[in-house]
Length: 317
Image (cartoon, rainbow, N blue to C red; front, side, top):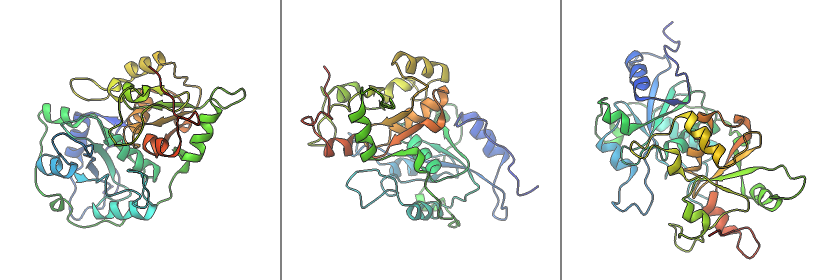
């Protein structure tokens, strides 16, 4: 039985206690080939972070013991002019090999203590898009620390003893929306006979309304025709930065008029916090999983490729 999994998480979102119990019961050894539970740090800060923090820096300062580091700024499409487009399957596989993750590992992605839930859902979503069989999100690292679970520090390179073999996967295109389809969705909004795809926007209400500026210079704020403002801050506990319980999330989506029977596309600034909306929909059991997708380019791509003049950037005061 040495090659069988000892413990499986019951849901996509896991608590600090659940992760701690799993790590205690699944202590890896150098000779074992059994599936492992691997904490994966997805720490990331905006380029204009007031304190100049980086994900690599906070990972080295404090992390879950045996955690690996997934660098959002490195594992992406470097040919794209947009910040966080999905990498190629080859780039993804190479990244997983370099951080020593195997295809049968049970991966629990987590965020920073400083920000709470923020970029981990994007990394978890990326793993799911590339078909990793067992992916979860820790809710969250701030609570892990506050509840007294262990942490360690040290260089990123010290964590991985040996690279893994990770096969080049296939991308699940059914989870992703690209610009041409997004443009069709926006143009079809309100037309009779249209599919009625709902776009949920995770940016702040001010950026969505066009009253606050975008953090990226020269980029206009506003929103896509028909999009619904779902600021990511409304999905999180203001004290802990943890994702709210499923029932609270369900009530929130209902209050915004989101129809669980219709397809949903999540969007944000660069495709990072859109994945928080997607995770929240899953935790709320809101809508069918196969009818939820993410717009990879999000507002940074949208606002550079359309304009107010053509009616595809709306303002609302």
